[in-house]
Image (tube, rainbow, N blue to C red; front, side, top):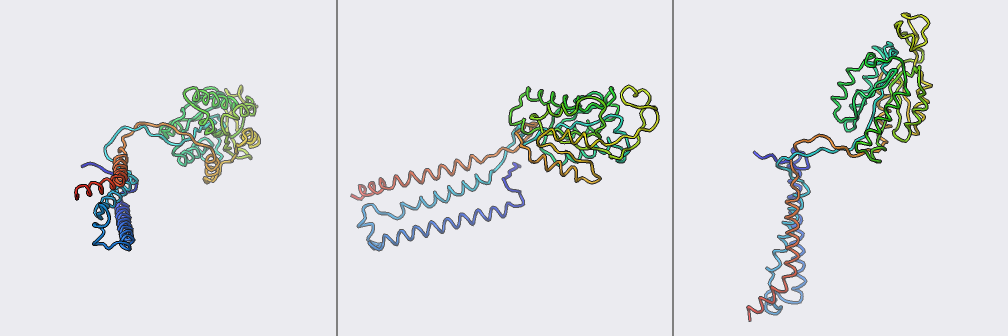
Length: 358
């Protein structure tokens, strides 16, 4: 059985069908009323029975097709507005989207259990919550510690993005340390590569970077890198952790990356909000938020991201029912054109009737 759909849900079909019938009935009554008023004006000067004799070629039946052509044209127009769909075709889906690179800190300090269960797991939860609120946006993932790497390019496939996110841990990067500057430079390079692959100026206005870190930086010029990113994307920063700090133990081999006086002993790792705020403020529209137990932080970031412009992004090919609105629209155009031609032809019909009567 052929599947047919309209612009409105199937459950609303009876309502719209009744509304359409009502509109056509009202139009028919109105047109009949106008024809009667026209006949009354004519009969003020000539009796109805004498009109065919005194008025050359007069016949009231000649005007009847005008009424039915108007009603039929209106019916086809309503069907075109309903946008009937049947038959399937492969269509490339296009949606309004923003490009968001998530830059995630995977250094050893993200293992600190403040907040619980640890900073990295809390960061994952916050990123997942943000992705769920942005179903039309493309997300990419860059992880960093002493170095930075694109783990997931920009994609509309949120399932793939989240699976990559779940696989990330503090052992993902082989080079230890915390270099936010390198992460931001890698983000800038990823955007430039995306633009070279077919981006445009409109796409540049729809870019955002979400840096998720505890801000405990031990190398690199993060503020300088953030300033280089200005103009290419809006920078949002989420701080994970507690300014009071939490204990984390670093092994002895990490002495070369961090200032640890006694290895294998607890180190107090603090959330550096001062540095993270300065990084965010390097972007004119940048925002810094601290992670909260609820999702108020994610909601705030989402509201800020909604102010960004979006651009059209092509997605995967999907089977869609073909919109056949052109067919009833063609019928409406034919009916209204025939109505105009009939009005033009009416004087010729009267002359033909006169010649035939003579």
